[in-house]
Image 1 (spheres, helix red, strand yellow):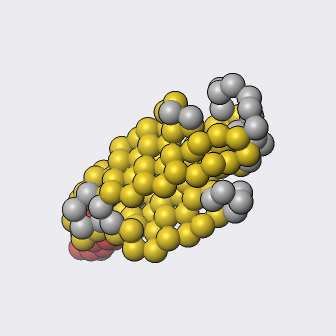
Image 2 (cartoon, helix red, strand yellow):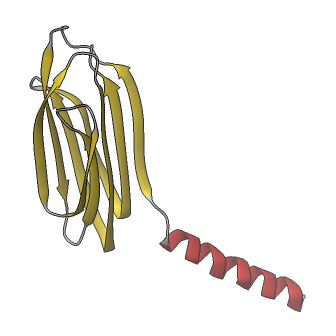
Length: 132
């Protein structure tokens, strides 16, 4: 009986450790998006990190390569012009000491292609798509 009690206690301690390290995440690869085909597109990345959140951000830049930014906080926005056929991706990983909120939005020529909100201490957002 004593061993069962100690096993239960150990499981409780380990599960509480796992809960404190959990990450809230959203990941989507959409493929080609539904916008009229043309030579280039205006892509707007937006992220708003709540109180205490600090994030690493990676996004597809004008040359079609990933640009990485470290320790982004508060509101962040970047507008880039991308050619047709470009694979576009926004990745963020944000952490805070207490639960906070992250808001994410991606627009192509003014049309919202992704809009999402995450809450937690660790937020991981990834969204990818291909321009027609």
